[in-house]
Amino acid sequence: MPGKQLEEGPMEVAAVEDGGDEGLGGLTVEELQQGQEAALALEDMMALSAQTLVRTEVEELYKEVRSLGQGRYGRVLLVTHRQKGTPLALKQLPKTSTSLRGFLYEFCVGLSLGTHSAIVAAYGIGIESANSYSFLTEPVLHGDLITLIQPKVGLPQRAAQRCAHQLASALEHIHSHGLVYRDLKPENVLVCDPACQRVKLTDFGHTRPRGTLLRLTGPPIPYTAPELCAPPPFPEGLPIQPALDAWALGVLVFCLLTGYFPWDQPLVEADPFYEDFLIWQASGQSQDRPQPWYGLSPAADTLLWGLLDPHPRKRSPVSSIKGYLGQSWKQREGKAEELAKELGEDGLGGQEAPKQKMPTWR
Ligand SMILES: Nc1ncnc2c1ncn2[C@@H]1O[C@H](COP(=O)(O)OP(=O)(O)OP(=O)(O)O)[C@@H](O)[C@H]1O
Image 1: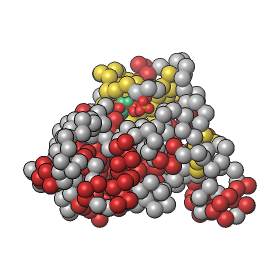
Image 2: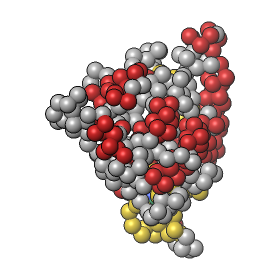
Image 3: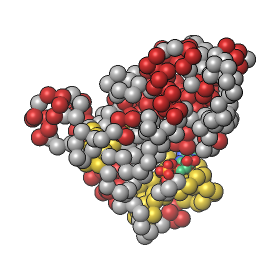
């Protein structure tokens, strides 16, 4: 998502000299340095890539086959190389809404991360045309994950675990490069086969170096971590951390397992589902388990409590998924209904069932 409204800035180096975590908005010196190194490496790569841009109209080199998708900022086309016939995905970003810098940024982030098996491979070809910028990646032809998640049901457990494992590994790779992905959602997860054996993360327009100062510019969504909703420690924003992606991964795993969002926004005042979750986390009592969580196993509860810890420093890293892979994440068939009965779910203490609706799947 390049060339978007200004919502971020680099963290002031002076903050490091202040010393202590306080002056760093909660980042350690090492974390801040890791982000700064990532930012410098990207700047170098962008300068080199700017010199190697191919200046031509896309049709001169590639033949359009069909549309693969349309995002807010660009469209993605399946094309073939005119001489070789090789199929490729071409992401095209109009110059009216994308700056050269924004384009180079997304292009270079994708290029530096695309060596991981669960990240879409980039071909290192950037094109500047009269009205657009484009780059080429491998085409992934079975659509995105949102089309496979059955509302109110989710994915079969094995498929959900395969997706979660691969996405955690992709995010770990991104974090090891000093970057935070920041846009985990099913629409950005491409599916390589109908059984969802292999998935790939795409769209690096929001990815930024760790420690970049960032403010929320619109209303939060379920994937937005609560620390981004709170007043930021600096006027320019919150220094971003990989914990933002761990939160989004927790929400995504919940969606994969249930077909529901756990809440609309992580705001106690505005969202009763989130408030119920915090009450359950605080009490640990089974009678406080919120309704959307009934279908999950104890292992999934523990995994998701870790990833969805409201305190970013206490939150489990994305790699915590690995410790839960051999276990069941869903209640066995019928168990969720039994549990509902046990908990008097047709009534909080025998009253009529609450008429509240689960968060609707969007
Ligand atoms: N390599 C690819 N192969 C197949 N389909 C793709 C590929 N890359 C993207 N798509 C499809 O195109 C859609 C839009 O792509 P992308 O998310 O990169 O655009 P965007 O404008 O940055 O989106 P957003 O609105 O999320 O910022 C994706 O949701 C996906 O369905």
